[in-house]
Image (cartoon, rainbow, N blue to C red):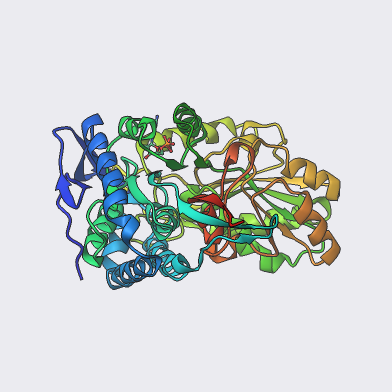
Length: 478
Ligand code: ADP
């Protein structure tokens, strides 16, 4: 199978369009230019929004939920059929180990399957009211939705946000990140193949300028954004100007809390993998490991041993850790590692073999005894850097865990059922995992943050509530 989409073009109204400004796409594993993408300007964005609005009114509104379901299901099948192509595009473009890119293709297909199944199962209510009234609610799409996504998990984020928006009857404009947009364009090509009407999904590529132009457009009805806190604030300000709802997923500083009675052998792979997967460039990465003092030395030594076995190499070498996305990200992460020079570094990973190219590699770093107010304990690093901190008791663990501005996910490792329940309630977090981390990424599980991690929920049915609005109809019949 192949997915065909022309180089340097983006998608408006089913047509591949280009501009005269181009951005180089770099392979993070080598530093080489692999393609160019066109930068969509204000006019292109305006066209895309206009088309999405017309398509909504004239075409998409007349398509039944059942038909949307069939389209999404066909799209899911096409994604599975193009598994190899999509995985290698994502691995090359993002620099992620091939196995992780393959898991992302599966997740994208699964999102389509989930939202295909859910599309015709969302409905309003009837509400008992005064005599002579019948009251019901209609659940309606917002209209034209903008999806501004980052470079770390393009396919997964397209799946959870565009999937839910299309299932609920919205039209979409997708703006992938300038660092990695090949699978977004491939997804666009597959929507055409699946038979989606032209203009239902439009894609504009480009830098933050294109994103700003899209988020400021007055005909957008909803924005979903995943990315940095600073850009999230700008997006929310744009949304405020047009008084439209916005879903923000802005990352985290997510803790795993290991109590003395935990099954440490079961915890170990999760403690490490959740920090280094995708080279730590994961919104829900677990960058803080909180360990009860009785088992602290033991956990430090177990994690250090695991770190020493971590191998770093190119995406196609398919090792534990690939390169970072860009030179800029490499500088940011290196700067944090530099800020850790006063801390104890207990272990790093290693290169499988010497790398002599322009790739953006960074060894995983494990720091211990990190004070709670240290910059490495407070800031999202977005690289393969984890810190370990010790705590005395439950209250102390909660104080440290809730002691950053973020609140995306958290996990608790203990065999004590009451403690599991108490901790789940006390943690400031959008998701809490007990004796696991991430629960396999479940597309069914509502996901989103509190505080600096953002607001609104993606994934599962909850996302479909977010992409719809309620109309109450009160019928007086005398
Ligand atoms: P990062 O710093 O990790 O690249 P960003 O949050 O800046 O993350 O980028 C995430 C997405 O937001 C990308 O698609 C990017 O082009 C877009 N973006 C960047 N700046 C803006 C902006 N001012 N308005 C809208 N979108 C933006």
